[in-house]
Amino acid sequence: MSEGTTEAEGGAETEGGAEVPAGLGTVAALGLKPALEAVLMVVDEPAGEEHLARILERPRRQVADALRELADEYTVQGRGFELRLVAGGWRFYTRPAYAAAVERFVLDGQQARLTQAALETLAVVAYRQPVSRSRVSAVRGVNCDGVMRTLLQRGLVEEAGTEPETGAILYRTTNYFLERMGLRGLDELPELAPFLPEAEAIEAETQEGVPSFDPDAPDTDDDHPTKTTTEL
Image (tube, rainbow, N blue to C red; front, side):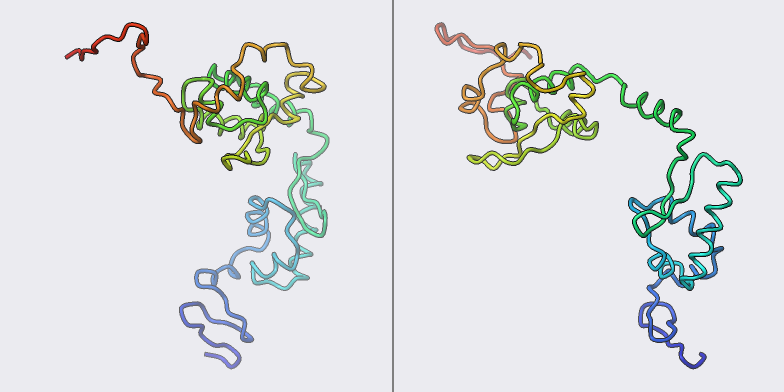
């Protein structure tokens, strides 16, 4: 073992006293440009040169030069994406010249039809917002947790604080919902709210998280109770 190099317990060798986490000792042997491309493919915000240099175990100057060379190469090759230095870091972006293709792809995905259950749930949220999931479930008569997750992922609804009495998370529609519906505001929604139960009427019949009734329970006549039988 050479001077200035020590072995870290449970990890790889270190140089100059800086420990390299176990499993990362081979990073320095990777090709710099392909490694940069791989890392930049998964970042969710611009990555700084210092951070990239530390991760890839290379001098910052070498990393900076490689990034600029990659950016130039993509431009010369006429690729549909570019590597930009933005807000002190580097990140891949689609090239403006191909914006029409990207826009068509994104809009095509967003125009996928919602299921009947999702449309019903969205309608309840739109007319009774802010509203908790339990109240939406009570209106529809079924558990709507999965459908609410879908609407959240589509960006059609969002969290809107909590209910003071129960602490339940409340939901409301988003600006994206208005855009997709072609509305300037919620006041332009069709007059359907009177056909939905009032929140106060539902509150006494619900518990947070689940409907307070069994949707599969058989109907009963309170005025003429009869003995129930079980079909074998």
